Length: 592
Ligand code: FES
Ligand code: MG
Image (cartoon, rainbow, N blue to C red; front, side, top):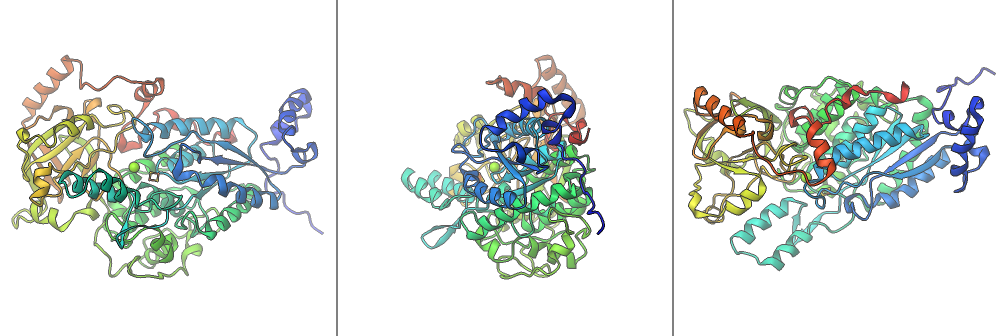
């Protein structure tokens, strides 16, 4: 008999529990873990210790079902000979956290890095779901680089109202218009919005949650086919169990995030994002994860590799269906298989199950081609993002797949100049200013105006608010004008169907070009050239900059908490992931 190869000679947890030179410290580390039921034999047996990074809690209802799924994770971990230790992750609830959940992505990241690095963990299951929980967990796993696998909580069941699908978030934008025009009252508004959330799970539209969970699978960090399973389904419990089993094997194989999340994996994620109609938050979060793992990824990669990819997945807000339908139609593997036939996927990227994404997805099929359209007959051609530049910002992005026929007719139908439009700016300083003034007839907003939102970036509205998609004034909506062009330094909800120009960097608060624009300035947008400029000459802009700098710079509200102040002092811009600048130099720290 030959010796079985020892795949990982020493588990990192041994440094805590098996330390002959310093037995008194070992005893101290051991005794508290023993007092809730682990045995000395077990802790010294060489069993891997697997963390369950628990993002669910009463404050995080989107991820709360992970409290149930954790039981199945534990079963799987135990059965493979691992020891599960569950711990809380700082809660991030997209819809509950003030001033914005995005403020806490980097906080949860920081705290999770400390836990993964500082405790005796050999591997970790990342319980992902609600928007920022997925990037926060993947960013931390990237920095620490112990074997890690993600488990999605899964989307909510489909919402229904009067026989029609009502999707998370998307219904809110629609209901707001109905309320603004008096078509429904307050109670009707609440009933309509609540109908979209019939069960546990995350948003059932192709918002940031479905996007980031799908991309976590496309990146290879989840078991294949697992992202789309609705939260309450039996299959969701089953995949939790298999995820628990698999992480123990990953520790034995020493399969780490840096083996999985390579540049090619990120390029796959970009292509998948276009095909699913993914959220405009994805470039921010993928940039952040890539920087923490040390993968080379630029904003321009989104246009280079993603723009030409068609929209295949017919989910709201770009299409009509919801999360349950996506699962039944084949989920992420069906999309990847279709993209593979076009040669658009780097097939050799290794994934969490130890196989390549090519092997995982090659035989997947589309089960319902109304929900996942074949590549040849998509919902829209060229559905990825375009990157815009100009004197207003170094970069901003636009999701072209949500440009409606109405929008196209109004702004993109000049036969001499079909990809450009021009108009006067109306400038709002933050969401409060917008809400206070948008319906004021004195502003004189017409359908030729462009709405600007500034003061909403990572520094200005700490974390960056999802406020760039602004509805038109109620009087214009009544005339049938539903979407004005919107431009801003904030973000936009992935559930919004607005073709806004957003994530503008640098933001006004960092004295980017948006700080200088004034209501009434003419602005020209050219989607063909990828340009966005205020038509004010350079000398005038330089004078405005000088005067604003002398006045102390672009003003934004004071911090309300210590973390807001710390984040504002260290955060970077949206175009490079809005990470804590300097944190990216700590890489693969579990190995050092
Ligand atoms: Fe949590 Fe949408 S609010 S997933
Ligand atoms: Mg959101």
